Structures are given as structure tokens and as C-alpha cells.
Length: 244
Ligand code: F6R
Image (cartoon, rainbow, N blue to C red; front, side, top):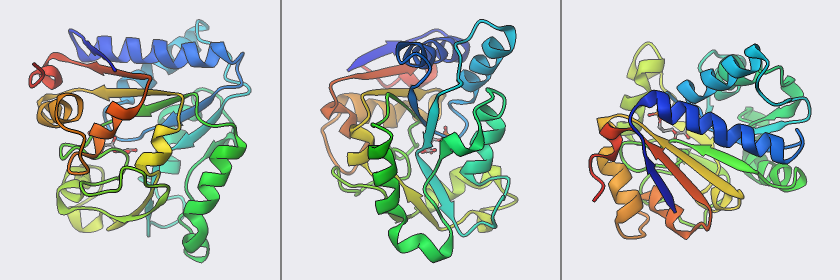
């Protein structure tokens, strides 16, 4: 694992954007990107958009994207659904058409098979070249909360109260945060060829230290990164504060 402590959130964004652009260029525009939502990757996504608008970014014409997770129970097109969020924050501004952006399907009729179908779609796409990840303050990765199987695949999960409270800032109140999600499993994430974990802010320091330097344990789902041969962790000083 390559852990890169950086001087600022801006540096995390710039280097994160470099890693994503390198993956796109390496596949001559046919890369498969795995995308996290949440606050942490937004500065890197804005940097990608800035470079694209300035004409210095790669072509995204053939790129396909897969989100990590999706809420269950929101109305179709809800602005806080991860499908809507990733379109607004990244893929629309980069000109990646909606039919090349995939996410687990939370529609009630297909829920029982949604996980299996998403796994099949990932395999059919040839797997993920670079997977962008954030980390939860409780060590969750995607929505694999503490206790999740390290070998898990895409499935329905129940959010902890801590994560619902963390995510209430995107909704009117904690009561509006869905209780269930569809999420890639830890085993799914490990299949990506390169994992890019971004961590910023003091709220991530304990979880990052546990993930990188603690024991491999389902109590800290992000510790599963220790099993992967190609992980890059980019962190700002506040998030790096707990590292030895
Ligand atoms: C989002 C996701 C989550 C977030 C995590 C951190 O797709 O999978 O695991 O990465 O909750 O969220 P932020 O970045 O908002 O602190």
C-alpha cells in the first residue's frame, strides 16, 4: 500500500485527479472508472472538470463508470440518489453519457436480484481500472459497515445510525436518510485493479489509522485494503494525524 501524506485538500484533489486521468489515458479512453460519492472526492472531481473544461484533460468519450452504492427507497430521480449526484458532480460535466454510468438498481421490483445483476455488469465491463474510495468515520468502505464480510459482494445493507447521522447533512433531517442501501461488497471492491482512497479532515484520522496500520478485521471494513496489491492512499494533514 502506498500512503501519501499531502499538505492540503487541494493537493489531494490534484493528485487524485492525476491518478484518475492516468487510468483514462492508459486505456486510450476506454477505461472503467469506479466512483465514490460523498464529500471527500468532490474536490478531485472538480479538478477533473476544471481540466476538462480547460482542454487539458483526456478524452472521456469511451469511458464507463460504476458507482459504489445507492440508497434504497428514494423516489426515482431524487437529487440525493447517488445516480443523480454522480451525474451532477462529475459525469455530466465531463460529457460522459448517462447510459455509460451504472449503479446498483434500487427499483423495488428488481431489488432481490439487483446485487447479482450489478456483479454481472461489472464482470461484463471487464472490471474496474481505478476505484475511487472514501472512508467512513467508523471505517466503512462503500456502505460496508463494521461487521461486513471481507469477501462480500453487492447486496442490500442496513445503515448504522452513525452513518445516517453523518449523511443527514445531504438531506433535510436524519429521518429523511434512507435506512437501506445497495452497496458493492468488500470482495467486489478488491477486484478493481487499482484502489484510490482519499481521506481528508480530522474526522477520518482514527478510521484511516485503523485501516492502514491496524489489524485486518471486519470491525474496520477499510482494513481490507491491506489485502490488495495496488492501493494508493492520499490524505491531508488532518486525516494523516493518527498515522505513525
Ligand atoms: C460513498 C461511499 C461512502 C463514503 C463515506 C465517506 O459512495 O461509498 O463510503 O465514501 O461515507 O463519506 P464522505 O466522503 O462524505 O465523508
